Length: 133
Image 1 (cartoon, rainbow, N blue to C red):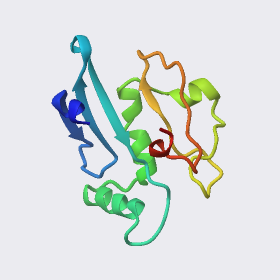
Image 2 (cartoon, helix red, strand yellow):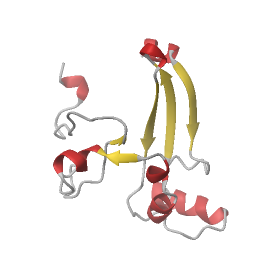
Image 3 (cartoon, rainbow, N blue to C red):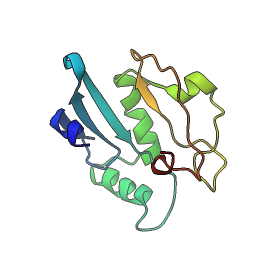
C-alpha cells in the first residue's frame, strides 16, 4: 500500500456524503490515471441504526423521500460514468449469492466500458484474500 499512496492523485465521496460511494484516483505507469470506486447500496432493513435507515434520514433532510436503493439507481451513478458490471458480462445475471446467509447476488464488480476484463469472479465465503497466499 505504501507505493499506492505515493501515486494518489485525488479522492472524493458522493455529494450527499452518505457513504454511497467513495473514490480514489491513482497515477500509474506511463502516467495512466485510474479511478477506483467503492460503492455501497444498502439492503432494505429496519431499525434505528441500520445503514438503510440512516440513508432514509439523510435523504429526508434534503426533502428527498425516495428509498435509498431507488435513489442510487435514479442518480444514474453507473450510467454517468459509463460503467459495466463485469460479473454479468462474463457470467450472466444469475451469479452466485454474495452474502453467506443469502441466495441472491447483491454485490458487483464494475469496470469502465473502455477496460477489457479478461477474468473476474468471487471467492467462496470461506476464503479471504489474506488466506490464499
